[in-house]
Length: 613
Image (cartoon, rainbow, N blue to C red; front, side, top):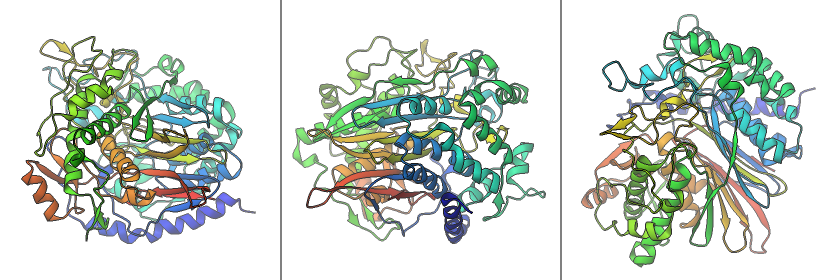
């Protein structure tokens, strides 16, 4: 007799096949032109679904970037599991069905609400003990090309996601650890249909054929990508999951699997220094959450080594200071307007202007100050101080400032050179709310598409070391985010939980993949939910936009010529690019009688789904 999960898997396979037409349309589109600071990333390839509607539930809900993962999360919630139980099951399935974005060979940042307290768990990768600040410098002292740095063992950091999930489960799990891997084991053994998105990403990565393991798994014997709908089995990964289910995270960090990871990293033509000692001594960390006030809400995110929590807090705080200074700069009245683009709506040009300007300021500070606080004295309190943000807001006017300079927040202890690293794209996102009101937002990654391109026992190893600055110093000053042994690279991941400031009630769980663009995506969705009173799906559907302290970026094909003209009239340099977010959100809503329920949405730019009961 088939399990409930197995039955639902056949239904979800059909969903993947239905989406084939969208993928073929995406394949026939002309290749996108990257911005001057952003290499063309296979993770940017996607369509835009126009049939998604907000999902509603009364008990629990899970959302992930792939429907098979979302179904695994819901299955754990149906068994009485907690939000973190659902997240663990979703991560295991994503390792299998979305291998290009995240997996047990990578890292994750987790923001969790247990019904009483917000907690955060840092599963960010660490630099091996043998790494030096010159890791990505060539013989002439110049930084090496990104692909040269990415492919192979050089870029692999010590994985952290399993340790973080294990730590969170020890404190907040309700189901036995072993149960959480059952859906992933079943899918790995029985197979799953290659989705349109996975097919497209396989087809667009010319480096896969250079890895014998990846070529055998993803490609046909003639080197062509396996077709959409091909049933892909991964017995090696099923065995790994079985060991993890039985032995805990130690199965990955000690013994035969750990030895194979090290051999793969050190034995590659582009070798890294990751050792058994690095794996055995890795520790996930519980850190104090970064919670700041925004109007009538409290917004909680990750502290460093993530820059995402700080940046989102800075952007929202700057917008609030703008509104306090001059009501003409208030976002609340700026409702999105209807458009003929696939999203169907677009923000007002003034809103795009103000949010982009606030983001310029935050990204300038990010490059100057933010790194792993275990190594660098980051002035976190100063960066989100309302008085400091009011001084930053005073720099915003009716015309774009172009390129912002970092500010001088209180609490600076050391002068650093700015990090001028190119801004990259990657990652996945899961959110869940359980029967008892607990909630989680987890952003998880192996960094670039298909990570380091090293495959061990059916899963991929990260290339997270490339999130460090390639250049360790400039003009005699160290870069805060330079490579150091044991250090965690700066991240843009911004898993976020939102609360009503007066009552303390949970309001929303939100987050997105997208590398350095995550901050833009989470900010847009948060503003859509809080300032514009959009439902979960509509807030996610909003066209993506913002600035990473370069051009004002607009999601290609989603904005009207009139809005673009208005931005240019305000002095913006506009760049229309692919902005393939993968935002998931679950919002607690109340009806006229005050009865609470859940409303969830998934990003139309990927294959995700929100599922609940």
